[in-house]
Length: 102
Image 1 (cartoon, rainbow, N blue to C red):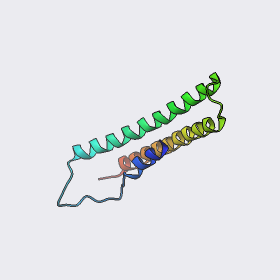
Image 2: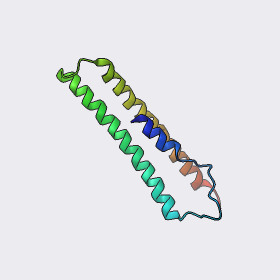
Image 3: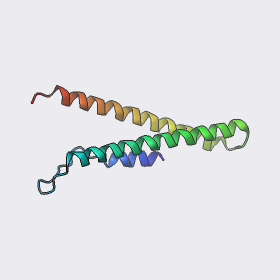
């Protein structure tokens, strides 16, 4: 699950140039960006839900393997922290673009 989040983020390449022969419509770029963000957030949510279910199962006595529960919780924590850091970077980039003079 966490790898999927990183793969979605890795697919976004801000330095990639669009060739002049095949200009992409702004609507298409906007849709692709929105889909990428939506997929990353869904993956984050899935990781959180998986961790919650494992924790609840451990508390109910349905799971004896605490190691997998702890690994699941750590994955969820790392994924959330990564998402928050990416959000901060995107907001910083947006603010920087807004400060630019045209």
